[in-house]
Amino acid sequence: MNQSLMLVCDRYGHPITARGAVSSKTLSNESSQSREPDGSKARAYHGRIFQEAATRSPIRRILIPIDAAQVKTADLKPILKVAQRFDAEVTLLHCYECPLSFQYAVGRPALTDVFFHSDLVRTQLLKLCAEVRMFFTKCRAEFVSGALPVEILRASQRLQSDLIVVPLFPDFVSYGWTAKEVMDELIRKANCAVLGISLAPNDHATASTI
Amino acid sequence: MKALEPDRSAHKLVSIKKVLVAVDLTKHSEATADYAAQIARWLNASIWIAHVFSHIPLSAWGSEGVHNVIAEERREHRSRLEQLTERVHQVVPKCQSVCVEGEPAEQLAALARDLDADLIIIASHHPTFLARLFNLDKAPKIVHRVHCPVLVFHEPSPLS
Image: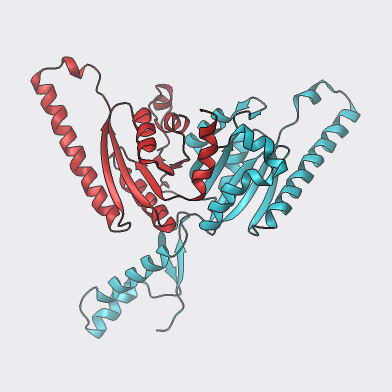
């Protein structure tokens, strides 16, 4: 009975079942055949499952919604250090919202400008991701457009994130959303853990010089 | 002075040594405590389990019977907290519990300051529309009041 044990866990690391291993049903049959004390093998098996589950990190996928135009690599360092400790992979998410100033623009050139601006922000996001990858390899970036909390929640479900880390800058204001409102929405509606980290304005401003 | 506090919040996150987990001792508390234990164990941190007795309005004017009922309820909460602490103690040996009384957000903020907690773990249970309308969910309040990183845990639904 030398089968490889593959644990199937839910998104929070709790073991659900094991593939390629003996099921509890066959285990009980075997134990009755081999006339061993009842449940001893099952206990050992479950013990092994929980032991292996304990060695798995409780947080494996972290989603970090950011404003790629404002955030610098140094701002993300505390969060990345935490991700490193959990051996988690990180996804930087930028949710693009068309700036209010573009709403006054009319015609085809305005549309071109919006696309150009969107591409500019996307490039900044990719650049930031590349900078982060220099010291934290398990990092990727996603660029989406839409309402901020909605897109964060959608991305967390799509990526099956275990944690959403929201870097809260006091001066942060998205179009129609304050940092407090975004955080409240995520707390109420997210399907995974949410961690809010306050970053000082000084940190944010001096980040580029670090 | 206030501007310095958020700065510490990010720095606290880098070396988490003390985790404070707040429980309301409802049926969800075990899942919250288990999750906090997993986190603390992974980070090799100590854990404090806190429960805040909320003030019951008008209880000060109640009869002796009302006071007895409240005292009985508190005793029951304490025993449940002890059971929860024993459960967590099996996973994280450095585990202690504390009971305080007052407004949950304020008391937790004070407790986190006194204990110098590096991370607070609380839970939110997807409140109903009415609960949100009457502002019964304490999680957002605590997140905005406390000056250290707050992790809000959502218990996975049985369907997912």
